[in-house]
Amino acid sequence: MNIIDISRDILTAPVYEGDPEPKIKQFLSIDNGDECNLSALYICLHNGTHADAKSHFLNDGLTIDQMPLDAFIGPCVVMEFSGEVITGETVEKYIPDDCERLLIKSNSKVALHESAVYELADKGVKLI
Image (tube, rainbow, N blue to C red; front, side, top):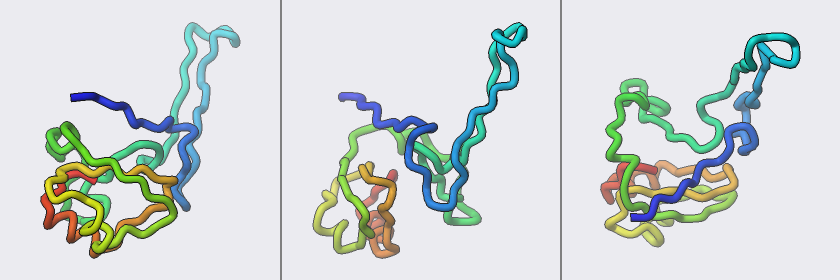
């Protein structure tokens, strides 16, 4: 199995509309006479390459620390979409029936229509 890192940099990745911009604030600096360099990171958990836990959309859904790791490891299908809403019809037409993990390559403007979510669930997809 090839392992491919698809991570986007958290400081330069597009920010979802309405989310705060990531910031780094330096607290200590060797150049200022401090014993070390120390910074703090402020970031929305929705930024960069991330996984939305079920609790992102469901009050009683699993939080990210409760999700099983096997959902995140294994073969996947990568589909590229841009500026679109992915519908159930799109899923039926383009996503293979044996897909367990779907990675969506996008410009951060892609949304899943409710019909797509149901189609993906019916296919047994455990990671989007």
